[in-house]
Image 1 (cartoon, helix red, strand yellow):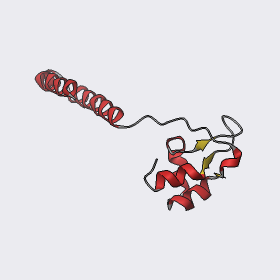
Image 2 (tube, rainbow, N blue to C red):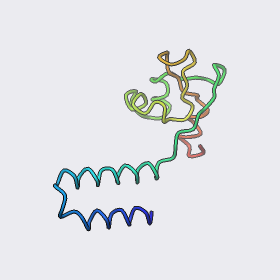
Image 3 (cartoon, one colour):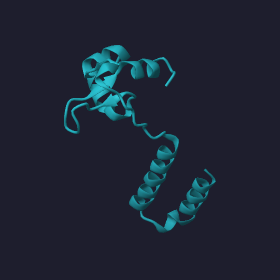
Image 4 (cartoon, rainbow, N blue to C red):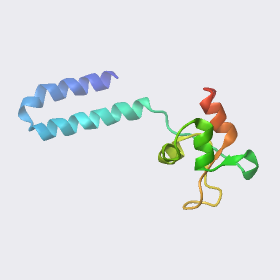
Amino acid sequence: MTDLAAQLRALADRADTLDPAEVCGALEALKLRIWLAATPAPTETRVSESDGLLDAAEAAALLGRSESWVRKRGRSLPGFCQPTGHGGRVRWARAALLAWRNGGY
């Protein structure tokens, strides 16, 4: 994060020469870099039909969330798969969701 501190100092040093939109844009770019650095990349999960695949409604019930919450986070939730390929139905592996819900993923 020392690189971030240097970038913030550099932005602060030239802030009076930039218009407000440029300052906001530079801050948003830095915010995105921080978020990306702090967020782990999703891992590819290989699952098969025999793994106990759940649809969005079943996954939502298991996690105690709404179906829209599950759909919105789709690929970022563990156990996500599309058995029929891109554009097909989406499913989540029950075991992966249980492990994630219980903090063991």
